[in-house]
Length: 271
Image (cartoon, rainbow, N blue to C red; front, side, top):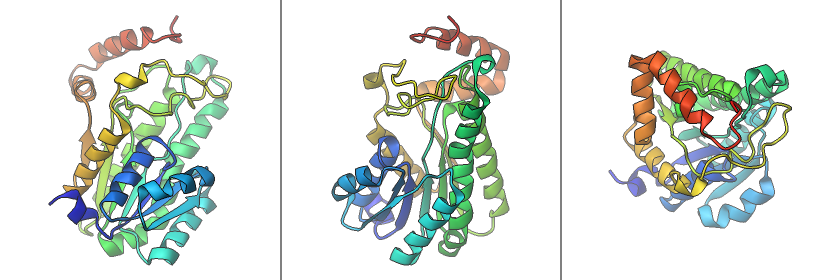
C-alpha cells in the first residue's frame, strides 16, 4: 500500500508543524490527500506555509506545554473534521549544558514541552483515536535510548515519552490503537539553534554541520512508512541503530564512546 492510498482523507494532527520534521511531515501528508491540522505557537508562520501543505489544512496556535491549548487543539480538530485518525507528537525543545551548571527551570521547561506536551495532546485525542482505531506517534530521539551528556533534560524527557507510549501501547493492545515510538538520529532542523543553555536562554547556533545531516523531508518519509506499516518502533540512521545496539549490550563502553563523541563538538561543555 502506498502513501497516497493510506493517508488520503485521514485527519492528522502534527504538533511542532511550523518547521523541521513537523512541517515536512505535514507537507507529505497533505500531498497524499490527508486533512492536516498544523499546530505550533507561530500561527502566522503556519498560515503562510499552509498553501504548500494541502487543500484541506487547519492551523491552530498551540503551546503544547499548556494543557488548555492541547484540549482546544483537539476540540477545534473535531469541530472542523469530525474525527482524528493520527496524532503526531512532534513539538520539542532541546538544551545543551552540564547539569552542574544548569538552572533547574531548563529541565522543567523541557519536560513541560516534550513530555507533558505529548501527554496532554494524547490524553484529549485518545477517545477519537480509539474510535477510529487510529495511531499516535511520539517523535523522540536516539537520546531517548542512550543518554547524551550535556543534554540531561533532553534525554530525560525523551526517555519519559518512550516509557509513556510503550505503556499506552500495552494498555490498548486489544483496542486497535497503533502506537509508534519514532526515533530519528541527527536530523537537519532548527532545534539546536533554539536549544536552551544553562541559564535558559537560546543557544542561537548549532554545534553540528546541519547540511550533512538527514533532511527533514527524508525523516518525514520514514515516519510515513512507519505509520503505513503500523510499526511500534522505528530507529533511524546507521549511527542511531548502532548506538542503541551498543548501549543495550555494552553500556559502559557506549558511555565512553559517547563522551568522546560529544567532547569533539564545537564549544563542547567538556572543554
